[in-house]
Length: 364
Ligand code: AGP
Image (cartoon, rainbow, N blue to C red; front, side, top):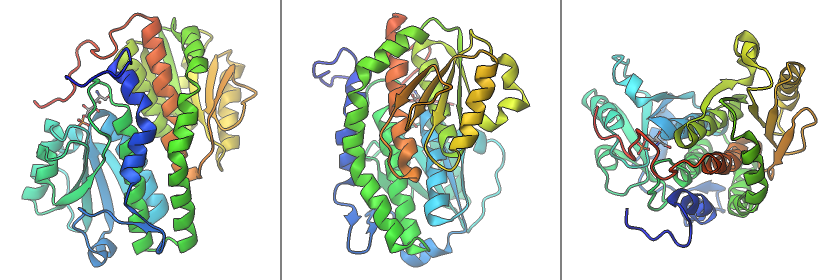
């Protein structure tokens, strides 16, 4: 790790602050306005083959798995292909049924994570087609895959992934749009998503400019023993990733749950000492999410909402800019990276080198 910190105190801070330009890079040269689609040069999957895909299975570990969960949602929404994500480490040990009509996608920042590489090798041995969504050019997973797309986040040094997560999700949005336009996504919807993608870098800058406000909030929550993160459908993987970020660098215990599952158990934990971070986008599930906030408030739980408008039931709301519903998860995770960062800083943690963790896990 010999990259210049460029005036930042930590690599994590540097990398979070590079996200607008990183997203710009993953978009550059790929948008085709004439057909309202995108071109991804290295996929090695022609239109006829893409139409033959019946199912998509995304594999990754940790943050890359979470990016894959959002990616699966984007593929289902935009391309209407059944898609899901699974930790590569689980997949490879359960003797999975490998189906010839399924397209497999391996996700990795480093391209060297052993569990992901082993899953790719097992899949290839069984004759499956595997694409890579990878950051490090020429890495083992990129070389092993049949094709794929680079994430172009640039070098990520900090053990915890931030800009690569954001760029990976954007790369999945591009892939979903590409597959969607080969299948049934309309020109109008393609255009709408492209316009949304183009707005991302500017909106990311707006969120990064909220850092002083987020720092203040982080200081208020830094004493918590444990925190709950909730979200629903598009918001749930955002909650999972935000809780992982907090755990990794602050060592505060955190759990992520679908908001809809609260009443099936975790609601029993809610009390003033257990704050909840809630992802509350302005979409068709807004009322449902508000009902969850009410349930938490009725048990005197403290709430920090990440939303598109101020949430009355929340103690604090971080209001983020609105994009297209499908693309909102890309933006909603960013304030929570800053939140985890400032919580860890307030607690005096070594942010770039969290205990017990390595940047890439190249062993079993
Ligand atoms: C991210 O903050 C983590 N340190 C970790 O979960 C990481 O995402 C995981 O080990 C996968 O790494 P990869 O993307 O390089 O494959």
